[in-house]
Structure formats: C-alpha cells, structure tokens
Image (cartoon, rainbow, N blue to C red; front, side, top):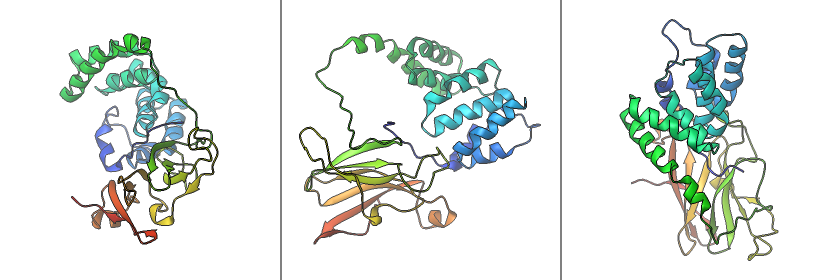
Length: 278
C-alpha cells in the first residue's frame, strides 16, 4: 500500500527536458512525458533503449516518470543507468540520491547528496542535498530507538491500489480515505483516478470488519482526483482536495491543478461542494 499520492501539473514538466540535445528530435515518448502521461511514456522510453536510441536520456526520463508519479523507489535502477551513461542533466545525481534513500540505501544516498551539495548548480537543491546528507547520518540512531506504537494492517481497507490520507468522520465514526481502486485509469501512474471512500468498522476498537463504501457522487467526479478529506470537530463541515480534469475549460473557470473544496452538512445531507476561495 502506498501512503501518499502527489498530483502534478503537466504544465510544469518542460523544465525537466534536460538530457536531450537540440539536435535530437522529440519522440512519442517525449510527448507523453510532457503531457504528464508517465505510465504510457515509460514503455515507449524502454523501447527506445532497446533500439539503442538516446539510452542515457531515456533511462533518465523513465526514472523521472516514476518520480513525478510518486514512485521514485522504482526509478533507482534507471537513475543509475542514466548517471553511469553520462546523462546531460546536472540534477540527475540529486534525484538518484532520493531514489536510493527511498529504498533504504542511506549511506550511498548520503554520498550522492554530499557530492551534489558541493558541486550542484541548483542552489535550492544543493541546500536541500546538504540537509538530506546531514539527516541521513542520524538514521542508524533513529532506527535503534524503541517505540510503543504498533503498526496494524487494515485488511478491511487495503487494496492493490494506493489507499491513503485517512481521517475519521466524527459524527458516524467512519474512516474516510482516498483510493485509486476503481474507475477510469489515470495515465500519470496507471492506477484509477483517486476517489473518496468510507468504512465503518464492525469492531470500532480493533478496527476490523465492515464494508468499504464510495462517498456520494458529489464528492467523486469522473476523470478527476479527490483526496485528503478533513472534517470540523462537529463533523458538519468537510474540506477536501480535487484536481481539475486537465482541460483549458477548467482553467478558465479558475480551477488550478488541485483546489480545495468545502461542503456543509445541513438538514440531512451534504451541500454541493464549492471551490474554497482565499
């Protein structure tokens, strides 16, 4: 079960085009990547590698596809191949360090972060790399600490997809969470679009039993992500995150990549969610 999902704006991706020289033509894989369709870009880049085309660059793009779809741990081998192949991206070593860290290879990750902190051209990333290296040196001591907390697998909730961002609805004692278990596939990561679900456990103390239900349609829109629900202490106000559908029409209506929406429990039902404006 992956715990976190980050929603990325495809329009922000072109800054990551480093690694391909001006003489190299953009391919179908590049088009998919720049549109944020990482899941479909990955096999196209792998095909380029098999043909011996832009090998270091294609490995880097595969690794970045995994990072930008919140699966950076899967990008480790591709970052390694890109770095060893001499990819023309000054920041590749920093992101390789992040992938190593995600896979628990702390000493090796610290080495890459330290090197980037000393030679990296991106000042913001260099400062972050220095902090990452410093923090990783504390990992052995942190892992040795004992804790009174217990981790419990919620069999009633878990699915093969991402299930994350859980909160408790105070009035019904239901656990509300986001999941990509159903519906149309999101081309960013190959899973379903995230929707909001709830479960009332049969045993509220042990958190076992119960049946997962999908929240009302007003909280789940086809072709959009919904996640990160939270409630007021009295359970009568709900705020959650919703993405747009990626069209210019949505942008013209004032919707960004991800916005917060609010709904109120009035009478015996929830109001239609409205864009929460600052």
